[in-house]
Length: 79
Ligand SMILES: [Zn+2]
Ligand SMILES: [Zn+2]
Picture 1 (cartoon, rainbow, N blue to C red):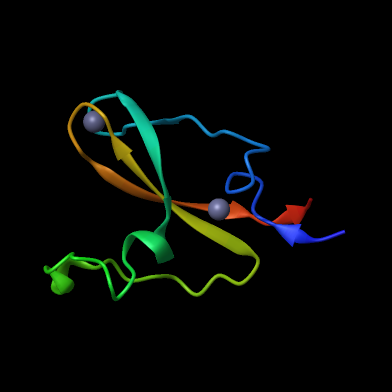
Picture 2: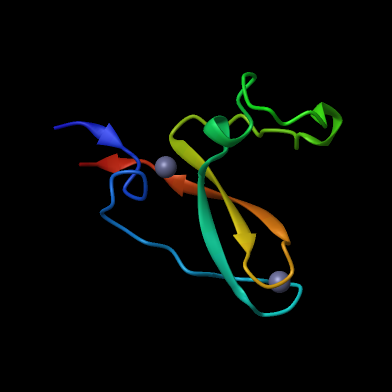
């Protein structure tokens, strides 16, 4: 048995509602992947502070309507 993120492993899908416009937020994947140092993302100053959260997988959700972004901590589970 392994510990892993149920969302990354496709076991769970999370529907977040945008607090800005009540629109549907889409899972953009792990924030570590999204803001990795090799990404072409040049606005490094805008990288959000990553909370130290062992035992959680931090996902970035983005609103499909207004592009509001939100970090969601997914608790790791036995998979
Ligand atoms: Zn994950
Ligand atoms: Zn929105």
